Length: 304
Image 1 (tube, rainbow, N blue to C red):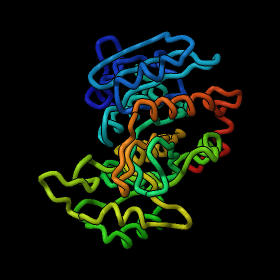
Image 2: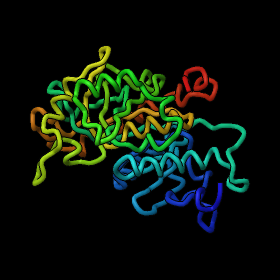
Image 3: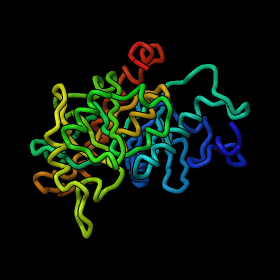
């Protein structure tokens, strides 16, 4: 790979994140908002490293004896492409040789995000874990092997159910890590399919001055089911995280604090409190004695 493909700073840092490999832990919490990074790292026993470039903020430290990083991604699938590609490169590309390393290092990504519920029975201030990500963007199609990680039967059923306009591109569905879902799920939270939109307004059925292409989009999403799975919520990152993670040989799970209920038209009275609840829930499990998974455990559970 040439200098225009793998771009490094003069100090050898990866281009956008502006960090070295030793600055990051293999267990990485992903948040969209750069201002949420210090909110998460405030729970660490110790913060040993911080970096900030553009919307990408990185804090690495220790909690309960475990080394953890939290990184802000910014908004949308295009930013996810940058962040996950560069985090993978830090562990799995030899920067001097500009070639993949012979030994692959699996990473664990946990997204801590905010989202709107598409189901009336999933109230604001609750937590949703994403068993699947539904990409309504086109980012993953830029990668040759994307068909290998997609749930094609679910996709075709979704296209038929929603009468999807193919001018918008082919939706893709990718499963999250089953092992992480099992570790992080409790009866206190919801789980389902998370829709990932390429924008906040029209792509999520909102109308200001411009009419959305499909004004019944959210109703169609809410009524879609496949083998017992329903679409629970919508945001702008999960499907991209799942697709790239599987292609790159990593594990990922997305967790969202519900701050809006679209069918009821309600919004959280205190979104910050809902996010804090999500952070505490995730960290209490991430730092237990069974976390993170070893490479051998990952190989036993990986299907790609």
